[in-house]
Length: 224
Image (cartoon, rainbow, N blue to C red; front, side):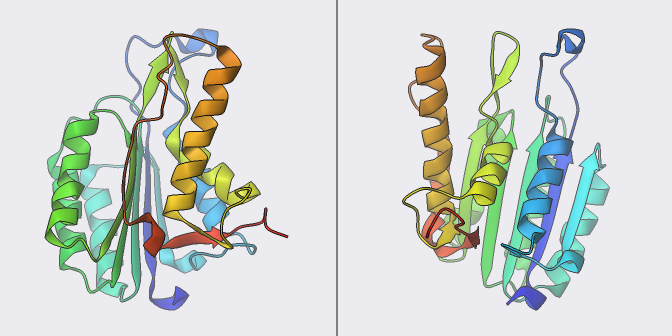
């Protein structure tokens, strides 16, 4: 139910110091990607969450702000609790994400949904994989590492998820579950690889996914 679901969307821009933004290259803004995801989730065509149920923290929110927002959402939720974390640059404080995972675990939510789009991938996702191991029937997870190709970010996960929700997934189900969105992200990567024909672009998008068929983030506008 919308009234008893909550979402915490974090878009943290901490650029790498050696990225040349003057030439228009570098990481895609996590702030802009997160704002776009928020807009799509709240749009009348999807309305996965009520406007008052979404905490959007963008720019460079402090770990304390992220933890407090998650704690507030966890205290009010009884249905779905979504935590989306999109970040550029290095992650210096992993205790923040470990705390978030513990707050989610202790909440009364029947469904826990995690989206991760950041660097330091093995360490970052490990906090939430422990959550999956502890409560596999409660958690749905979709995570992808941010990556560069010749100083320009390629195939950002959060933006691709937002786009897939907004325009729909051809041949996908009526409700856009995480499994369908995962497949759409992988298809986007394949399309990009075929377009640039670059041997340095990996053959398949590296994603970690768990129980994506349990939760939907919108209605598929690509269906008749």
